[in-house]
Amino acid sequence: ENGDQKKEPACFSTVIPGWFSEMSPMWPGEAHSLKVEKVLFQGKSDYQDVIVFQSATYGKVLVLDGVIQLTERDECAYQEMITHLPLCSIPNPKKVLVIGGGDGGVLREVARHASVEQIDMCEIDKMVVDVSKQFFPDVAIGYEDPRVNLVIGDGVAFLKNAAEGSYDAVIVDSSDPIGPAKELFEKPFFQSVARALRPGGVVCTQAESLWLHMDIIEDIVANCREIFKGSVNYAWTSVPTYPSGVIGFMLCSTEGPDVDFKHPLNPIDESSSKSNGPLKFYNAEIHSAAFCLPSFAKKVIESK
Ligand code: SAM
Image (cartoon, rainbow, N blue to C red):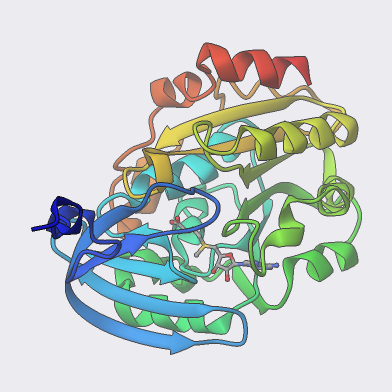
């Protein structure tokens, strides 16, 4: 008998039968897995592969190009933070732009702000919008708000054509920089965001994981320090189904009235947003805490 020929234990299989394993060159050497109860949708849009499955422990899951975008169980941690970190940091936001975010969850959160009069959204992929309306009604409920104006198109082109100084806040809820979202992480895009914001306006953009992507984060921070003359900050939150279990945000403001992101001044009046369900994750304490960085990241981010 040849001892080298031993059968590998099942837990070593690259894809565990009956489980979804998330593999990408963006997190080499690791693959978070979820047990699949049932595949509910599989499609191919002009931009990406779209899958929805029922998981055993996280509810329904939306996957784009093999990467988890949201699960019913933990989407609150992402959608509430990416929205309320910027909007609770400025008084009276009125005009808000969302780039990406086709599932509608950020819209649901923006809609909690009674001061908001107009919510523009530019998502590249109509299939994400349709699939979310079909399978994630508690997330896509954001589309029901009459202030929402949805444009299907590329966020890069949309921002190039946006009127100068027109938005109080821009929220960039993008997928990873491999695929259609690549340009949403590049300098020219940040320049057009800054142009579209009013003086003292704010941007919050999905900015990857401290554990996996310090190189990407360093570049984003360096670009933002050049472009945004108000303040530049990194915040993060815990999302168990994102690679490494955390995700970060870049929060910047343009030159103008000072924005102190670490001390929220515009609390949400929960009575005005009953139809969107209660907040599950965000509160004023976690808002301020989100800007506390581990030492290894603090050193790099503050040196840029
Ligand atoms: N809201 C999700 C969550 O809860 O985690 C996060 C991801 S959201 C589904 C990301 C969206 O960005 C996708 O729907 C994708 O189609 C969209 N997107 C990617 N590139 C884009 C671009 N260049 N312009 C507009 N939208 C884009």
